[in-house]
Amino acid sequence: MRVSEQLAQVAVVLKDTTHPGNIGSVARAMKTMGLSRLLLVAARTQIDATSRALSAGATDILDNAEWQQTLPEALTEFTHVYAFSARRRDMSPRCLSPQEAATEAMGQVRQGGRAAFIFGGERSGLENEDILQATAIIEIAANPEFPSLNLAQAVQIAAYELRQATGIARAGDRRQMPTREELDAMIEHLQQALAAVGLPKKNDTRPLMARLRLLLTRADLDQSEVRLLRGIWRAILSRPDDEKLNSPPPAGSNECYDGEGGPSTP
Image (cartoon, rainbow, N blue to C red):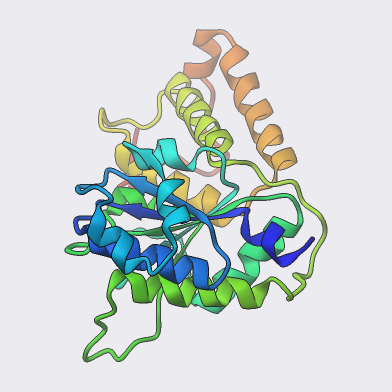
């Protein structure tokens, strides 16, 4: 697969962008390294003359930019999603350097996958719920006393590493990876199976489901593994209701996880 063909399977995703000039500068950073696909999610500005001027000729990327209202909508087709973040979160996927993420992403591209690199808004970056959409987060090893990169600079680092990684083979077999849409469907299926057996015990399912999403994302499941898990959950859902709710707990345990950091007794 040629370099241009590999890079065509990678998208730069900007969320909550507020300044039109930054969109243009990002387009310039992308085209310099051969990237061409730009997604704008919940953008708070439009592409204008300033964008075009700062793109320095990368107007084709601006003209072909894709607009989406929400991040999940934008990510449905991608098998691997990487989120740039300047700070660690209480709950977050594994953390990679730009080089590590680029090498992994291009390895997946050569196996038929697609990768997205997400960058948050200029003021506050990505929100916690955005991070939960990612396969991994990326931290740039900047000066800890002044870790102040602008949006285009961060994209330039990612774009450079991606281009370098087009020639690096990734060890491992040719696994068929699920898209974000398939993973989201798996998580929804799991939530249905948990509800069928009376879990979690609290009305608010969000803490538990957030932790389970992270767990399953870190597992780096391929499509066959997703189908295996969904088969188990399908079997749970097919049982009569009285069997689901009266199933005995695992031997030696009388506790269930409440999703908020500790066990609770039923």
